Length: 397
Ligand code: AMP
Image 1 (spheres, rainbow, N blue to C red):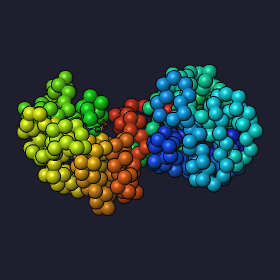
Image 2 (image 1 turned 90 degrees about the vertical axis):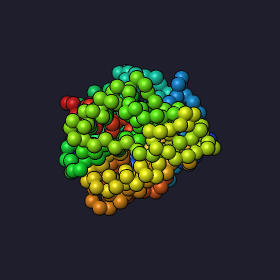
Image 3 (image 1 turned 135 degrees about the vertical axis):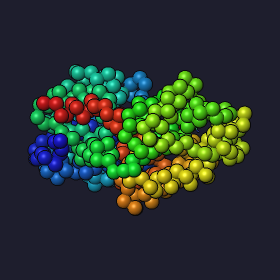
Image 4 (image 1 turned 135 degrees about the horizontal axis):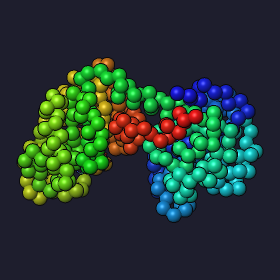
């Protein structure tokens, strides 16, 4: 795997696909800069060699052309402070300003391009658009794991225009190595903890890991489809009735393979999908009519913590409850704490996906697990065994 470590950037211009898709508040202040910080080692390696850097990223999901709230200009000052040098900005990623500033870029200088997704050609994987980006630089580096599962112009198609001079950034390389460790070099017991809203969006992952794990904890909204499939009463909890049969089959299959599927024994229930709702705790398969499960209960937290404590290889994706509401975050927090303890005891612990990562960051525990992946979708697709287009494009001659 060729990375920036294997290349001397002296006198070269490197265009680096980073993931600067950071959350901004209503005054455009960055509320979590971990994605920017994660990209710094690659940028600094190029600069240290005596190269110059052109950074490109998306931010948010602009619909039709430029939108103020998705402009990457909001991060220029912060990036400049982190790099301790001026960061130039081109207000269009492929326009005249990009070409002009790019042409005049000197060793040690950094240029940030405006949001790639202000052009619909980016997500369409347009060749001409990719070529325009490519022509700004001598070397292409992909350091954005979060979008490596997308065949976009800047993540995949652009690589065609660099025969030799294309490589992985340090972050992307580290992501791939860490995930491979969970997938290939498995210590047992191997536990997967899968939460989040729906079975339908996680079914491919579940199908893929069910053959590999010893234990599978299922939490979040998706647990209610499983509980209902076993004849439980779930009130008005989130459910996908068209996945009941899938859930039933998975329970049956797991049993035949000696894989333990753990569903929470109790749940925090609410009379409304709101932080102000009335709440109670009950058995997770006896939820009264008019109530919905919003988090795992205390007994489930204890039992899941002890399963986590016994595992040696742990993959976690997706919250145990509606973690963005304070009232229903405790179940997800209990998983974070148990993961940290398991890591201290020597387990390999990998966390990925927006909400699980947000919870671990909020608790300040990210450094206390083995690895926090910046990718949600990309992490899951990689674990599913799919080839990521962004990775394949770099490996291809
Ligand atoms: P995902 O993106 O699939 O990992 O799902 C994350 C979402 O699942 C979060 O927005 C949570 O609010 C949601 N979620 C977790 N538990 C529940 C639940 N019990 N009922 C409804 N939504 C839930």
